[in-house]
Amino acid sequence: MLHGKRILLIISGGIAAYKCLDLIRRLRERGASVRCVLTDAATQFVTPLSVSALSEDRVYGDLFSLTDEAEMGHIQLSRDADLLVVAPATTNIMAKMAQGIGDDLATTVLLATDKDVLVAPSMNVRMWEHAATQENITTLKSRGIRFAGPTEGNMACGEFGEGRMVEPLEIVAEIETYFAASAPLAGRRAVVTSGPTLEAIDPVRYIANRSSGKQGHAIAAALAGMGAETILVTGPTSEAAPPGVEVHHIESAREMYDACMSALPADIAVCAAAVADWRPAEQGDSKIKKEHDAAPPRIEMIENPDILRTLSAAGNQRPALVVGFAAETDNLIENATSKRKRKGCDWIVANDVSPETGTFGGETNTVHLITGTDTEAWPAMRKTDVADRLAERIAHHFDQNTEAAE
Ligand code: C5P
Image 1 (cartoon, rainbow, N blue to C red):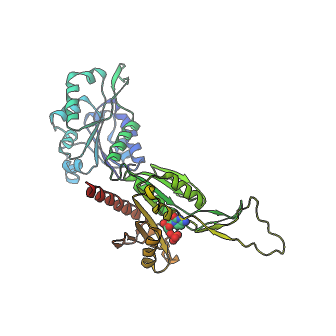
Image 2: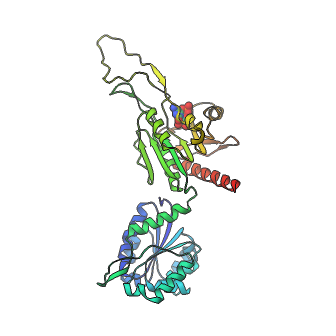
């Protein structure tokens, strides 16, 4: 969910600062980059060395450091982030934020930022309940500062009450909610098909194809990364389940069809799977025997349901945007353009899968996006970049349509 997000973590001097080490790990596990600013007091609780090792970045702390300013001025530091997180936030740093005091790097960055700020307070219950703290919190909330916690519990000082910093995973959840709400495809639902299908000949043998699922999985990951609730219906592949995606594993085209239909309604459908066009007409319960001297069996094939075509004609269940793929070995644009019409989908992504392109199973793809009004030639790029670009185009499409409707 946090893939590519840049978090500026400001650590102030409270006993809960040790939990920030775990917070940094959790954020990085989810694909975020974390750059840290420590107040002087914070360095009494955690060392810049630990913070730097976990964030795999240098740590900032001194407003008047010539090297720091030359490398990354405090204004740049505050702008080069998608979200600022203050954890733990002491009563002191919140008081300075409320008063607009900038007397060290952390508070100056907080004054200079044009980004949203999430604060995770941590202090003794009396300090939390103090009228000054409560007034400062009211001021900060009125300025749009977000809060995660605090909660109630046992305190390091031996008292019990409100003021405990929330656990790192709860701060992570708040950060994910923040990005999900502002994501371009928030509130949209997407169904993506990926990988090959396996069509059984008998309980042992099957017919399959060379699809690796890399492109479809990358598209599901990109749509989820942009905030869409994403359902991935995939045939057998060795690709890992993309984070934040609901995955349905299927084998045959008919199972893929059923899984897609029960995933409706959806706003977006992207059919990237290499669905078998035909399946053996008979799929017996027992293994076909190789009889001595007998002729090889003849396998009669029948047509599979066309998922893309069915989704495109699903009446009031039809996703607002249906995108198909056209894997072609010759006359790419011509064949893909007529496929778009035949299938009834809105867009088609045409790719050349001639063996010499290495598209099947490879990391790169060269595609054309055919939208009906335009045919765009995209340069050769990694499948993950094709996915990101397609997801951006989809988000842009919904943006334009929402504007037009307003
Ligand atoms: O007809 P063809 O297989 O070339 O069409 C490719 C497009 O149609 C892809 O988007 C593929 O996922 C989709 N398709 C489908 N169901 C089928 C066959 C193809 O959804 N049975």
